Length: 377
Image 1 (tube, one colour):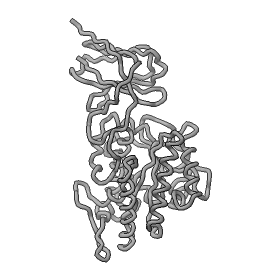
Image 2: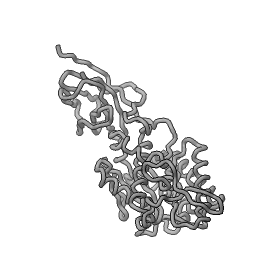
Image 3: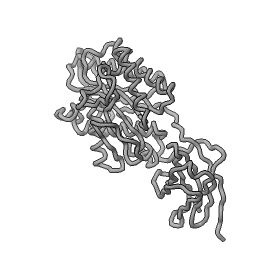
Image 4: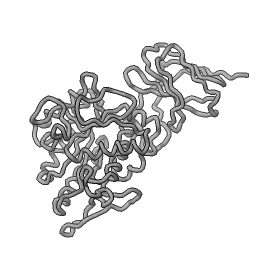
């Protein structure tokens, strides 16, 4: 006898899992653990990491990672208008709208001269302009997903007063996005660990430590630890170090530096940064950073219905116009099937699937994602 199970679909908004988001050397090799579900969510994002020459490293690394594994697909652009929303690939740029000297226009590196410390935090005018840029990046159909500043060497910007200005400015952007209702996630960063003299390297290390301490003291803050990632080689737990007047501190590894010709480092260093960035963006998208399963949010009422039989799953939508797509995943995050152009009824053929628990993910017209676990006999 064919068993037919009628279930009410219970859907809810995806929630960010607990645990502070700190992308350092310990997460570089964990990018491979990101479930396909969250890879697909990251592909809907727009990351902007404005800066100067060092900012090229993440963009170069993103291309290198895609070449190694196309599922980490990315679109990197360095000029023109930001790319419109797409679910097909992560959009990555160094762009900001305006800077402290030029209040309008998209500022890139290298074409536009880049976005320096003077544009992110050194003056109140810089902070005001950056906030205006955030607003512009969330208008006209644009939706900036993640935003952080890429440091350059700037040997004269390392003492505690400058560090506090950076921390205060970055926190103000976080609060600004929250007050405006923007989904943009602003993250803290550390900076370069190359080329500088031994003494300056030590003072910059102290600056990075102050930033790390500030982030650690507030679990809502996020950190992309550019410096720490480059001080370790793949598969190593001990950092490279150097010594200045008895002060031993982490420094970029010879492998990650190479000849310094690729954004002041090597392809290996760029690739490590890209892997850590994918991990961080997946965490922002809702992944807990540990499980290769998909985290299911709490349940809510008033949803369509699922009818499950031995050979197929039927989903009945009361308001089909509210939905863009429904996808079927394994619990390991592998996409099995998808239906677009939602009608009153969607049918998934399941006779070929092993019996077990599966996940339906529903994409709403407002781009939110909701989900429900079901048992398919």
